[in-house]
Image (cartoon, rainbow, N blue to C red; front, side, top):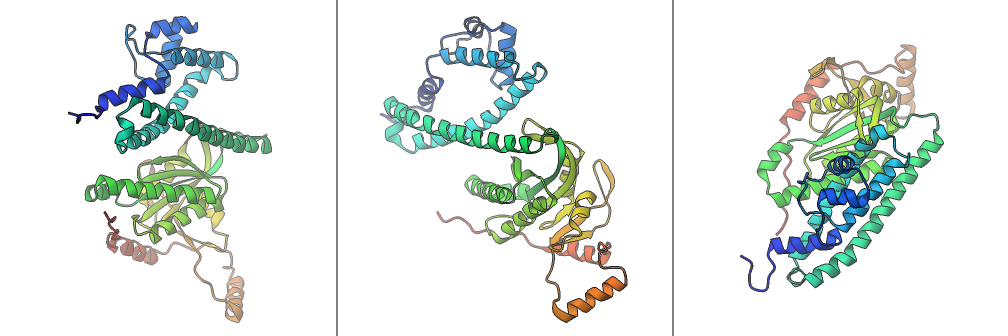
Length: 380
C-alpha cells in the first residue's frame, strides 16, 4: 500500500500513459481503421508488425494519435517508396528497434520519477517533466538518425556499383569469458555496471576504427568492418581494453571475412556463422580468424598470424583457424639485416608461419590455468 500522499505505481503508470499517448483511450481497433480510411485487415497487419499486442475488436485502447499514425503508415506504404513485398518486414524492423529504445527511455523516466517523490506525487509535475523531456529526446533521436542516413547515403553514392545488401565485409564477435558464472557471483547492480562498461568500451573501440555495431547480445558484441585492418584493430583493441580494465572479465573474439547479407540492420550468411563458431572456440584473451582473413593479414608487419590445429564445431568438421596477435618487437640494426638476408636466401622471407603444435599446446595450457580475474567491488 502506498503511504499517505504518495501515488501508487498503477496510478502513476496510468497518468504517464495518458500523457505519452497524447490523449484518452476512446476507440476500438475497428473504429481506428474506419476513421483512418485504412482497410481493417491492413490495419491489423500493420499493428502486429509494429510489435504491439493484439487486442480484441471491442477493446477501447486507441487514441486520436493512433488514427493519425495508421493513416500516415498506410500512405507511406502506398507511396511507392517501399516495395509492397517487404513492407511488413520494414514495419517489423522499425517496431523492434524503437521498442528497445522505448524500453530504455521509460526505465530512465521511471527512475527519475520514483527517485523524486515530489514529482511522482503530482500529475502536474509529471506532465511538466515529460513535456520538457520528450521534445529533447526527439531532437536527439532525429539528429542521430539523420547522421546515420548521411553516412550510409554517402557510401551508396561513392560506390554506386556496390550491392549494399550483399557485400564483402569483416564480421566479428567479441564476448566476455565466463559470463554465465559471473551472473551467479554478482548482484544485479554490479552486473549492470559490468554490462554498461562493456557496451561503453565496445562502442568507443568500434567507432574509433570505422566499424559498425550490429547489435549487443548481452555479454557479446557483433560488429562489421569494411577492411581487414579495421576488423583486426577492433578485436585487438577490445581485448587490450578489457585486459587493462579491472572491472571487466577477459574477452575472446572470432573474425571472418566474406560476403554477407545485410538486412534491416542485421547481418546474415555463412561468414557470420563462421565468426560465431570461431568465437566459441577461442581461448580467453585470444582472437581467432578464418582462412580468408588470415591471408589478408599475414603479410602485414604489425600483426602475427599463426595457423592453429583443426577443430570440429557445429557445421564445420575441420575448421582450421589462425590466431591473431600484434607483432612482437623485432630485432633492429645490423643483426636484423643479417636475419632478413638469411631468410631471403632460404626463400622464407614472406612465408606464413607454419602451425606450431608445441606453441599451441603451451598457449592453451596457459589460458586454461589462468585464474578468474579479481574484480574490484564498487564502494557503497
